[in-house]
Length: 358
Image 1 (cartoon, one colour):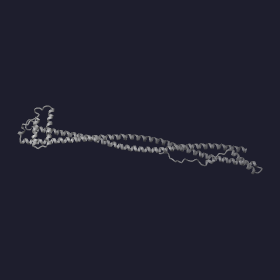
Image 2 (spheres, helix red, strand yellow):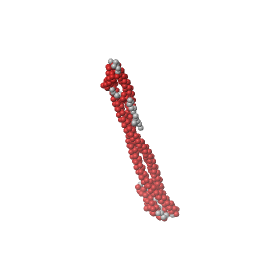
Image 3 (tube, one colour):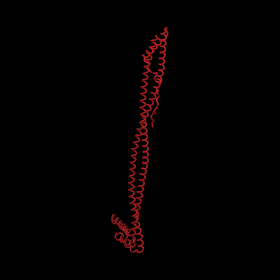
Image 4 (cartoon, one colour):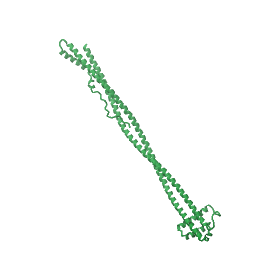
């Protein structure tokens, strides 16, 4: 901050003794005084020396006027010195106040610029934070849906694998008990395959849901074969273990799907965590920068307010100093003119006395 020039500064006062000593004495008054003195001298002096008495009185009057002139000149010189000091000190105060005014004005301008810049930065950061929050919310919603879909698909595949595994175990057990019953099963025919599986699962007391799931798996396998065209001659085996091979194939496919699903879930989760961390780090950095910018803006506002207060005081001090300088200069010029007048009057008086003494 730039301090304003001291207020209430007591400027030096002009010497008080100069006022009575600078009073003018007109030539007419001196002549009257001279005449009166001469009259008194003539009345009181011996008859033989009236002229000597007048001359003596004129000498005394001349000495008195000369002494008054010297006293007035001394007072005038002191007053002139005071004028010089007062003028010099006041001019210095004005110069200091002017420089302070310029610095304070520049400080206010800079603070105003800092405030405007900080305000724009805060607005920009707030917008960035809001945008990151919206992006994180959207990504979280998508991730929640992906996670829910994964859990549902994972549960379904795990149930299918479990169903197929139990079906394979049951069929293998039944094949050991009655191999002839499975010897003629044609696994290339969907209806025959389903009928055979139905007989097995019914005997094994599968639940309705397990039966439905197993049938759906077998039918989906047959549909895939239709999409690729008729199966090759060696695609299926017509022997007692053919049905197990079909179920094992279905189980293997389900396990591959489950593995791929879990891998995709791991990647999706990792990508989400990376995105979340990036957004949270950016929001944390922007929030910290926003807080610092707000603090800087507050400091700039305080500096601006302080500088404005100092500027108001400085402007007043400057105006007071300029008015004081004008007064000092005016008073000093007036006193100098009065001194010249009284000086000329005194010289006239002394001239008149000198003429009278001749």
